[in-house]
Amino acid sequence: GAGVSQSPSNKVTEKGKDVELRCDPISGHTALYWYRQRLGQGLEFLIYFQGNSAPDKSGLPSDRFSAERTGESVSTLTIQRTQQEDSAVYLCASSLPSNSYEQYFGPGTRLTVT
Amino acid sequence: GQSLEQPSEVTAVEGAIVQINCTYQTSGFYGLSWYQQHDGGAPTFLSYNALDGLEETGRFSSFLSRSDSYGYLLLQELQMKDSASYFCAVTVNTGFQKLVFGTGTRLLVSP
Image (cartoon, chains in turn blue, brown):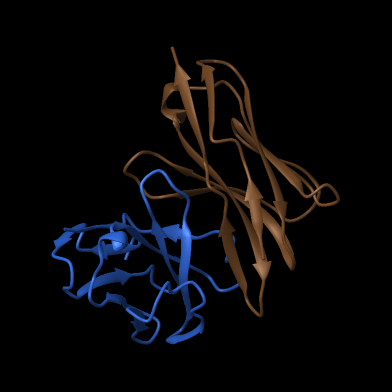
């Protein structure tokens, strides 16, 4: 596609429910990243994919968070048993593997846990 | 670990020049990037410095001093549309290259 797309754009869920966030990267971008951004804060790295493997999951805050990627395409970030502190914007980015400094971001999913 | 420091907020008037500084402490440093993010929008890439010196892209320039672990983004001929948050980010190698972002500088441009 022309850019990185994410869905849904907004998600309101009740505490304790599971949510799935989707990211569709730019075609040909084998590197894919997930970040979390709380209101007024910086970008917090969550996980990095190269192809469909995840060599760095160090940013996942707890075992309630998981992610997978199908081939060099769509990725899904799953949050189980959501908590209010999970409320944030979840951003996905993609890049060419040799150009990790230049990442292209999607519009994000705004997650609100009530 | 890695840490980056940048001012939380900078204000300026239209037509002025503003400099946003970034200092970092990191291992495996490869380079320094700058991203712009408007309220409610996605971060967009502005510039990247791997070597010491100044890189110019239109009204924006970015500088890096590796020996001082310091860089800055220079915005000239400020326009109202430049009001946004600006993030510096270091590329580090932890077995692979990844970006570590600073906390961002909010730039407010007034008429």
